[in-house]
Length: 349
Ligand SMILES: NC(=O)c1ccc[n+]([C@@H]2O[C@H](COP(=O)([O-])OP(=O)(O)OC[C@H]3O[C@@H](n4cnc5c(N)ncnc54)[C@H](O)[C@@H]3O)[C@@H](O)[C@H]2O)c1
Image (cartoon, rainbow, N blue to C red; front, side, top):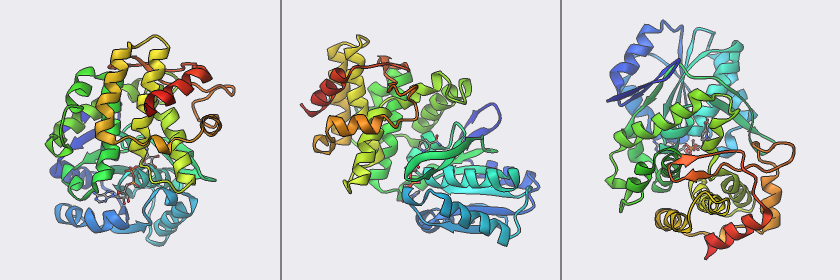
């Protein structure tokens, strides 16, 4: 059992008693648990066993394609039908999709209902549930509509990871590696030398990773500066992921981020921040974990077009978050087209 105190809420790890206390002391008028089909099947039974209060279940369709306004309407309609009010509590039991969308739906219902996050994927446990970003996709653009609002609390339970498909676990692990690369060189060293994810001490690893995300997002909640370092690997990574999504190519978010991290490490080398030896080390450590997907990189023209839509851009210029060194990120970095082309070649070689 571990705890991380944030400014306005606490992240509890493996603390069922804490969850029951939070719910009982809150004097909520009613309780709603939002799930998708998978968390209904795999996570709700344990939640029901451990939490002794009556609640209503709101079931949504799983997957990124359902993180949209239609699903919000389902949630809002259920809130109305089942008598939710401002004093109700919404519990988001699921991965980043449920957390982002359930938090957004609750925060906008009656101008703000209480909500807590119970993240059930590794990605949502180490990343999405902390930092207050909530929202939905709109016109197929990721997270276009949303707000920043912190939950009442976050309760992480590592036993939920037992039913998570391996590739989803790997996807979340990419963000753990990213946290190491931008903030904790020792964690990067240790975590990239494992033979299998099963060797990991989940509770300890999640605790360390959440602390990094918490420290960065608390200093800069609205992403005016330092929070941008969390985008390392995501400028090229998102572009590759978007291309894969719209072309029916199988590629997980984490795999795309791993590719982005290797290329953006190379860009850090091109900028003079890293040595070639450091750059190659990152590549040689990341590829064995996430695979080599060179054939899934689109042409430079397509990549540039996709990156031109990146939310971090300013006045039409693509800005990267890179590595100052291993264990220290930076942001608002300009890079040349030639350097981007070379970073792709470096990844492919
Ligand atoms: N708010 C933020 O700061 C932030 C940060 C990173 C990512 N995100 C968002 O998070 C989303 C991705 O999150 P995700 O990877 O968790 O995706 P997800 O929520 O779609 O979950 C992945 C899959 O795992 C299933 N699942 C969830 N928990 C399970 C469990 N314990 N056992 C078995 N199956 C389970 C889900 O039903 C889904 O099919 C994206 O929408 C992304 O934009 C938000």
